[in-house]
Length: 304
Image 1 (tube, rainbow, N blue to C red):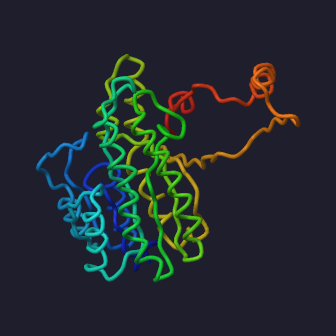
Image 2: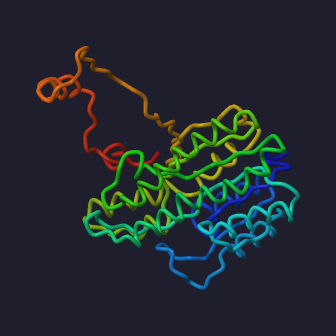
Image 3: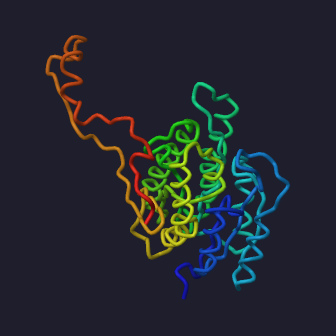
């Protein structure tokens, strides 16, 4: 018995990288899989490739069941079509894994509106559209699981990725509320912030020997294959009590991330004047205020 026997899963962006490994692992766990991939490049450009068909062939060769879908997650009709593909092909939909994404890395002062909108459309709107189409099936059947891919680029920050970080933080907020609203219907929702060598990471320019060595170790020790089993688990009945959380997966490490909570309060019974704020605000809060550390500073050791 596989951990996902009897389940039907839709994995977006499943033609390459993390999505591909997730689709293969879910099929290995017994799920019937809709392998969605538009076949686009890192920045969303058309490539004329159809990697989804290749993944389906691999799943079938291993004895699993899968179908390919080439619709775009950022198109409402396409999102509905890929969910319908799962229901029409396999009779139901139990899990949605939102992996599909693109990068348009630019410094904020150089970012065009097109760069901003393109990334928001694929990541944030794509997660919304696919999840919205799927929940209409999950709610009446009384079960379902979402795994959305967020990023430490949003959770902690990453220079040059304001569009990507904003979209990924939006996904984390969306996931929490889906979990809250879905609880009464048996619908769960979690996020994963992945650390893995993919073509997106490969597209980042190497600017020093130190960076090159760090990337070499990262490529060796943090692969997409490390992430896939955690996704399969979160979509299974074994994780029935796990919802509304954000996890990080980096090599053999699994992190549970904190979520925003009030950590300190300052109060003035007669209200805050400009002078009172100037004299008391920073001194009262300075030990708790966050600094400019980002992903690289938080994770400054090699993957285990």
